[in-house]
Length: 291
Image (cartoon, rainbow, N blue to C red; front, side, top):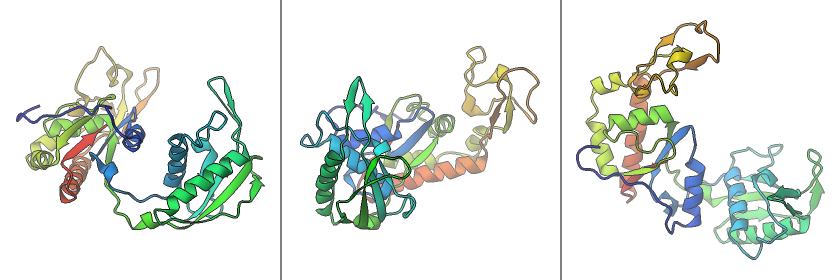
């Protein structure tokens, strides 16, 4: 790290449940997401699938409906794709009543428990301007054979909200971007970090064409002897030192293919990070985080 800029790891602390959920969603083994730190303070658009997540989180964070015999998961709540767009803002959501075994406990998830949770959740969302159609009818799913209650989202005020941008890329590509802007590989393999948005803009502006060309990698098949995780062949993979072949090597074992990383890809990702930082500054936020 250069220039004396402090890059801090994000820690749990007294983080609220929504921010914990947000970080849990973007913590991936194989990729890194760059996002506006504290963006949870801005209401974002919620499609039908987001509302399904919202329902399960509502249940877990409301003690009055989070009882010993009730444990719905995302497997039990889903958009009805037979009549709605999966990522649409309005349409029908299916709430299934399926028993579940978890940690040696049986959760009945009775139709009555689901119906009560749905009633409380829709009442809560109506305060935000959502309008639902719920006839209270419990049917039997022809696909799964479980009781199901179908709720129609008639009005979704979040469709007018501003979508906060994020930039996601594979670990190796994220490592290349962080190295290009002088941070190194902080944030990779389970770590998190933050950088001042103004500082990020400055660093991106200082990236040279020579640096971009040096961060490119070729496409092709990779020999087992030069795979990225081979401890006997250590190297900085982001630097483009991968030996590739136009056709699979004849040696035994899994044949790995890499799509490479060209200058256009790097330009695109740097522009995405620039736009992310610019959005943060324009909306009163100071930090860009990654995880």
